[in-house]
Length: 441
Ligand SMILES: [Zn+2]
Ligand SMILES: [Zn+2]
Image (cartoon, rainbow, N blue to C red; front, top):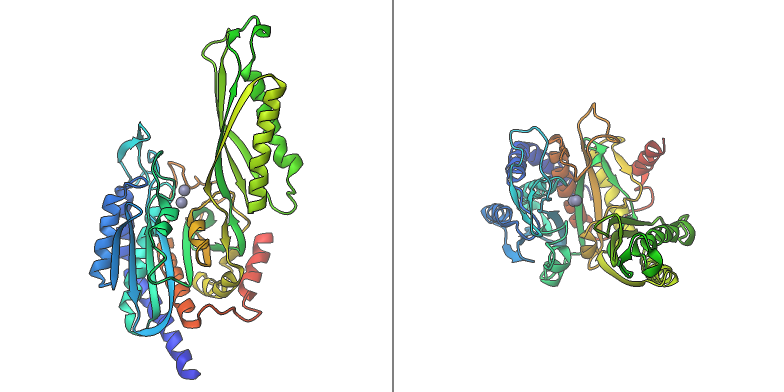
């Protein structure tokens, strides 16, 4: 119907105009958040800024204190329709900033008993500012808005402090996706692996599951000159490390899905001539599907125990599940790709390879279909393959990306509300097909 088409296109134009008008304020919000970063479950000031903003916009509901410091806002449009959720994470990292900016972070705090610098080294300040911008854009268009938009501002994506719960899993447990239940959820992440304004997305498994393990090899302490009187946990641990490296290389079908097993910490011994009593190792496991995840967990345990037994050492293995695989719902992804293509502009939507990093956005996707995509923030002239990555003390965000993020989430939400949860006809991937060939080149 032509009249509906006109309404839809004018809504799109209004979103773009409002985003353009808001750009300098989104940048100002991001700078303020960047200068005042807070770690997971400690986002008190940040949550206050967000909640005040949402209240000022006159949202129909603003819930605070969800999963400690989370904020959930609800905007009900004037026209009936479905519910869509948009998510931004708010926490910073224990990193001391080294970027030379007038609003660089000088914050310091204590984290798990250690004094640390605090920095938005993963760009969650950008995510928060972007979603605040989206809320303002959509609140201004409430009269034309179909259905409702739920704004989910999440704490502790980078894991809560030891001994605490938090993050997306806890938000779900505390009802962030209830009353009303959204039919879809969308989120984005800024990345140093894509040039400014480029959007990266893929259907299906997108980011890895992330689990940590600790292995303690129990030997018997003795003199370093007389190893036959004891049981050496250091040599045994060396064998365990090598054994663990054969799990993926010899045991996982990497032609189907990749996986990673990394030992990142090994601790044992106090001096050169004492064979210690025990050695502790810690590491991480990344996979892209649940069966592989369970299989590797079983293999890590068996391998460490069997090697230790062969050396007459004892062994305690503890594997803790952190985040499930971030899986983009294939139909929903197909539905939003044309929107992302339109927002990014010609040739600027890429189908990206899998990312072995992880995201607790996956917990939301376990409840409702969701799509998580990436937004490039690397300034022109810099090589996105070599610039300081997310989590580096030199991680840098080109702020011209922020307005692209606002437009992307606002358009994705509105297009979903306009069309509902219907799959797009074949051919919707045309724009992404072009991007695919760009990436292959
Ligand atoms: Zn991160
Ligand atoms: Zn992050």
